[in-house]
Image 1 (cartoon, helix red, strand yellow):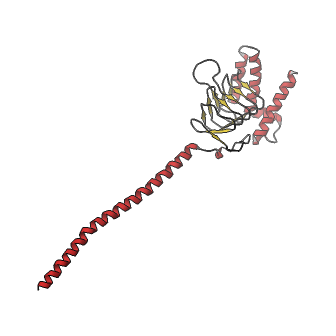
Image 2 (cartoon, rainbow, N blue to C red):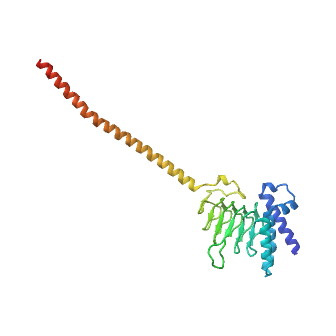
Image 3 (cartoon, rainbow, N blue to C red):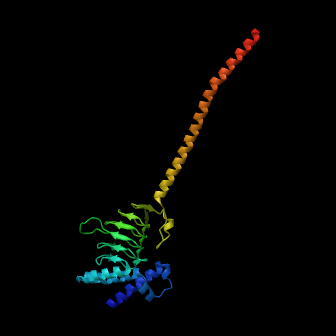
Length: 251
């Protein structure tokens, strides 16, 4: 029975790699197990987690430390990770002690599921099903990431994220995709909205508009000043004309 469970978990992890990593398509299961560090890290975690739940001392942490040295992925043995979790590339991924990860979650390199402060208890993120977290993203504290959400690369998340939302920026801003579910897994990070860039474009448009208004007002002021200067000059010319005419009449 236990053997069947282990074999099923290995098959599920290999399948997740094939479904979500284009480089793994058409690759044999043995090669994935030997050469995909994210898969290796998950398998090592499952062994360490099983021992941790049976209150075996020391060994789970030794397995975690060894796996970190080999794969570059650090997963605390007490973390709860559901089936189908795939860590692409893996290097630099950190998953803290009280982290909870649902089914079919995808993590890219450099992701941190970390805690805040020194208080005991629940202090790491809860990731619901079908979530994709981009490279370098930092999820800090006991935040809840709703099912189907998408976290952009290098985003810092410190608040809960609604289901089916896209989050980008520092700190992360949730951007709902109106009427459309984000496909899973969706790695087209260049298509993510950028609220900071949108705000900068708005400022640029506003500045351009103000510059046009200022330019128009400056031209109008210059024209008014020129008219004022021309007024006395014309009056003086007219007066000179009358004076010259009178002098000619006297002669």
